[in-house]
Length: 158
Image 1 (cartoon, rainbow, N blue to C red):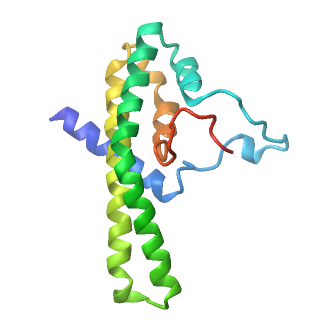
Image 2 (image 1 turned 90 degrees about the horizontal axis):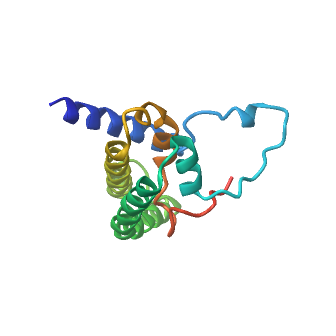
Image 3 (image 1 turned 120 degrees about the horizontal axis):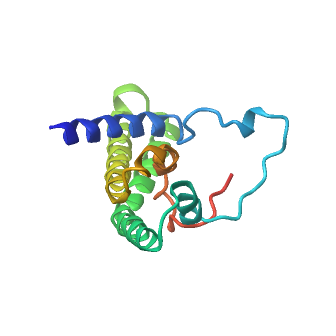
């Protein structure tokens, strides 16, 4: 019961983040006077550094993320089509109830992607030691939109 409640809460948080464009609010760097520098670390490098992963954990978490990327592949195509259909409907002058089917299809695809992201985070969280779990907040924030590209482990664009 408690696990179900945690997963439900995490899912709600990811959906909220997805609605913000995956930004999760403003970053400290975006509000500073210093220019933003591009990090050349891959996402796996950043995750490993944040959580102080050992070799076995790196391999396990990399596998979890690779498997989720494969699951998200079919959904990524569905999301692109739904987005295109929504744009075409809006450009075609549809509004209100006429736009609802395209909006619903896009929202459903976004929700499915959020579920994959949350399930993946839950698997990562379970793979962590008790002292690493409290440090997983930044990894949770990274999950929003991580599978929208063809490779989750690239250097993230800024």
